[in-house]
Amino acid sequence: MKQADGFSLVELMVALVIFAFGVLAGVALLGSGYRWEGQAELETQMTVAAEMKVEELKALAGTELPDTVELVLGGDLESNTTGYWDTAELDGRTFTRRWRIQAGPAGTRQVTVRVLPLDPPAAGYAELWTHVLHE
Image (tube, rainbow, N blue to C red; front, side, top):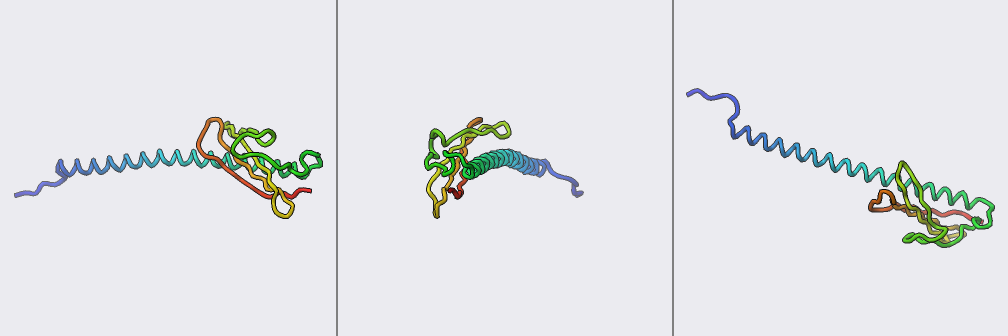
């Protein structure tokens, strides 16, 4: 009896099923990768917005303006408090920035800035803090 060369129909079907699962897994990973990239970009933008506010507050602490020389204690990270929040726009996104000024060690002020995405809204926030010398 002569042996036939090639694949049987059953072997071909099994190979196609395995290939289909591989393709579907690859597509799912690709979608997850895009979401992760978007989240990483958002986190970077929030961090940049927080860094910009920290630098702005540090610069104000060095001026001779009577209301900013000491970085007046106050603010709230959970709600918008007059004088301790603003909005910033980066790359077409709008963020809410809230900051809190607390007494720090050795005559410093502890400045904490929290940034939340406003438009379009998204989950999560970025928070930075530093100590600022004041006179």
